[in-house]
Length: 153
Image (cartoon, helix red, strand yellow):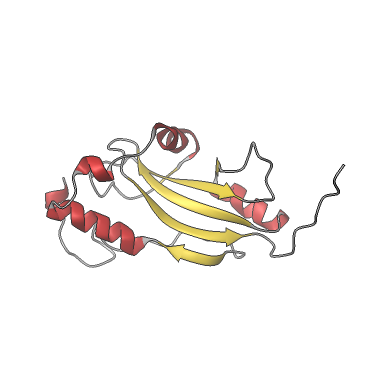
């Protein structure tokens, strides 16, 4: 449980920095949310917030983690189970309305980045057991070329 967490080195502690995911070479404007994650876990360990407040993944996110998530090689920082997955979402004007905000595999994002001009990527870690979830990183991917306007009909 959380009370067993200690302030160890950043690489080995539950509060420490996460290993950087292999971002696509087209990634720009990368925002790492490790400090916010660390603060949330410290608040939980200190009793300033309850487990219900930080383990609040919605049903849609849990489903996305179950069916589209990629397993992580570290345990959940809250319940210590090996049920952690990474879910990657993409948003952008270059996507049709029905596929905007879709959960995708990391390999799919790299392929899209070679083809599409620009879109936002959000990576969320999720524990399917205790419902812990936190935004890990966000960035802009794509070719960087200006979007071609479609002719109106």
